[in-house]
Length: 227
Image 1: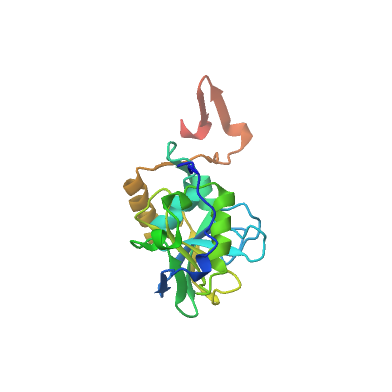
Image 2: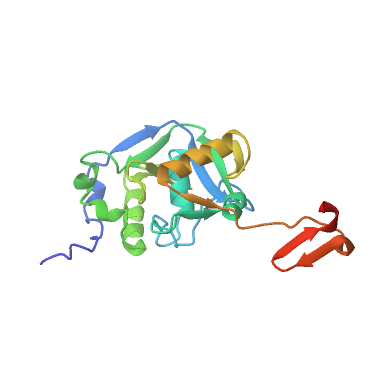
């Protein structure tokens, strides 16, 4: 039977007996999240790529570096590389570190996909197929804490998906908005230049002035005291 080249196959029935590549990841991870939420959040909504298809475990998504966290969180459409300052102010970037090294199924190494019967379609695949693979790898006897996989928009960068029933406690090392001043703003400029992102100011606050001193002219609003 021919397999549709555009369709990702379900995990093989013998996956539990196959060798998976597990690495120890002992570096911080970077989590981009809404400022209204805590950075450590394991979702069970079944809306995202490697969520549990049956909601039996939660999944936290992060980047192995801050560039990956940005591209995975803030760029939804690569054909429209525009990010507003409102978005940057409403999202925070947190640096997290596990209480021990994370044991991750490494899907980025040479040979890792072939050994488990998968291919690169796993990463841009439809959510239902990818979630079946998440469940199969979660249940593998290796008992890994999560997955290490290439970013969809920048395959050189690595992303992390952690399982809440395995992952160690995560400690927050730092947290600030993406648009925080100082070093963070300079780093943001580097990321924007690297990906050729256009940062757009979309929230303007008019100065508060007494109404009695404001003078209107066609196409112009200014303060009479400025004359």
